[in-house]
Image (cartoon, rainbow, N blue to C red; front, side, top):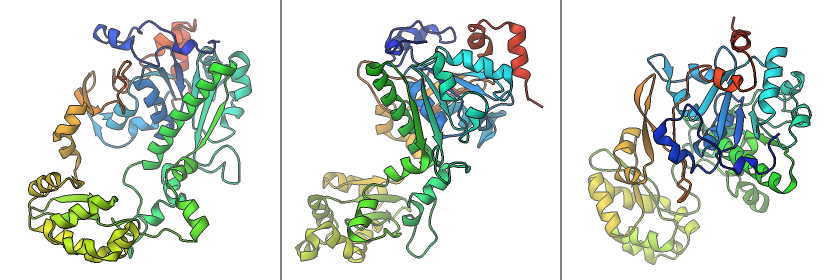
Length: 419
C-alpha cells in the first residue's frame, strides 16, 4: 500500500518515456501518483487525462475488445483521433473485469495505486467484488472516483447517464438558442468536460485530505451536479425573484451590447460590454455616443432592455467594415471584441502560438500529430503531453508483468471475452 504522501515523492521515469523527456518528467508535479482509469468515453477519461498531463502514471484498463472511444468519431488510418487525444499520457492494459482472473489481476493492480477512476452503473463494481471496501482493505489510502450521470443513489441512479442528459437537465439547453427556436444542445461534450475537470479537482481534494488523515475515500460525482454547478446564479436568481431564464440567442439579460455581428467581408465578431466604461467606449466608437446619455444606459439591465437599439447601432457600424478593421478599431478604442474562429483559425492565431496552446508529437500510428496542450502552465513544474493514446494492450507486459504474472497468464487475460 502506498503511504499517504508517497505519490508526491520522486520516481524514476518509466521505460516507455524517451530520453529527451526524462528531465521534464522528473519535474512533473504528479510524478509518483498512480491512477487506474477504468472509465469509458469522456468525463472519467478526461479526469484521468488531466492527471496524466501533469505526470501521474495513468494505467488505462480496457476491455480486451478495446475501449469504445477507439471506435468513436473521426478516424484516420484506422485510428480514432478522439482516442489519440483522451488516451494520451496513458498506458493501455487489457483486462476483462467480469471474470475471476480479471478481477484478481485488477485487485493486484490496485494494491499499490493511489486512485481508481470508474464510471460503471452503480452496483457494477460491487457485483464484481471490486467494491471500495474490498479494494481499500488492502489499500486504505485508495481514492475511488466514481463518475456517473446521476450519482450513486437516488431514483435515477440506475439509469444510463451521459453528458447530453446533464446538458438537458441542468437548465443549459432550455436557456440556449434563439427565443423562438428549440432548446439547443452543444455540439461537443460540454457537460463531460465540466465533469472531467470537476472529477480531477475532486480527486486531488481527496488526495490532499489523505495527506492529513492517512486514509482514502470515495468520490461520488454526478455529471448532472457538476453541470448544474457551472450554471452560475440561476438557482439563486429563481429562488429570490421567481424568474426562469429563457432563451435569448446571443444576447444577455444582464448587459448590452452582447451579441455576434457580421462584418463586411462575411466574417463574424463577438462583442461583450459588461462594464459601464466599456459599453460607453463601444457606443462612442460606433458613432452613437448620444445613447450613453440616456438614463437606461447607466446599468447593465437597462442596456439589455434596450438591446434592439444598441444592437442596431453596433451591427450597422460593423457591417461597413472588414473583420480586420473592426478588430483594429476596437483595440484602439480599448473595447472588448473577438473574432469568431473555426478550428483552422485557432491554429493560425498568434496568441495561441505564444501560449503554446497546441502541441505536436510524433505518433507511431499517425506520424506528426497536433492536439491541444496541457490546460495551464506551472512556472516550476509544468505538465507535458508525452505520447498520444497508445495501442490496445500496449503496456500489458510492462504493467501486468510487474505484478509477477507470467507471459502466458498475461496473454490469457488479454484474450478473455473478446468474442
